[in-house]
Amino acid sequence: MPKIQVFITNPVEEEIQNIVQEKRSEGADRSEANVSNTSSMLIELGLRVYKLQNDKKEGGFSQIEFNKVMLEHMIKTSLISQKLIRMSAKNTELQGLEDFKLGVMSSQIKAGVDSVMETFFPSIENEE
Image 1 (cartoon, rainbow, N blue to C red):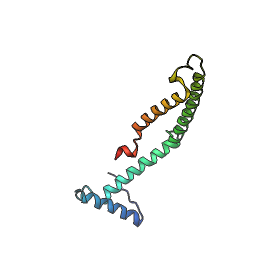
Image 2 (cartoon, one colour; image 1 turned 45 degrees about the vertical axis):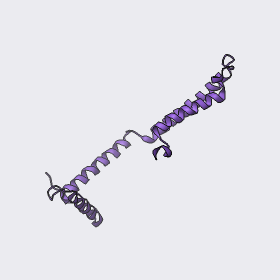
Image 3 (tube, rainbow, N blue to C red; image 1 turned 135 degrees about the horizontal axis):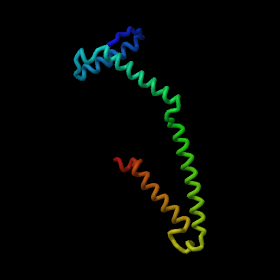
Image 4 (tube, rainbow, N blue to C red; image 1 turned 180 degrees about the vertical axis):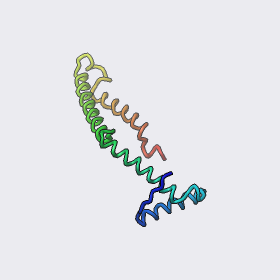
C-alpha cells in the first residue's frame, strides 16, 4: 500500500481521533480502528463525493430539473382534467345523471386523491 504524508488542522485530527475512539468503544481493536485506516476511509469517502459532484456538473441527474418537469406536467394534467370535467358536466346526455354533476365529480375526485395521499403521507392522528 502506498504511503502519503498529509498535514491536517488540529480540529480535523481531533475529529479523526473521535472516530477512532468511537470505533474502539464499539469493540474494534487497535488494528481495526486507528488513525491510518480511519484517515484512509475518510479520503476514499471524500473521493467518492468529489466524483459524484463532478458527474453532476457533466450532465448527471438533476433533482431540481426533474422536479421542475414533473411539476409542469402535473399542472398541465390538472388543467386539462379540469377542462374535460367542465365539458362533460355540460354534456346534455350526462346532465340528468347524479354522478356527473360538477360538485359530485369534484368531491369524488377529492376523496380519491385523499385516499391515495393518505397511503403515502399518513396523517399524524393515524400514527398515534
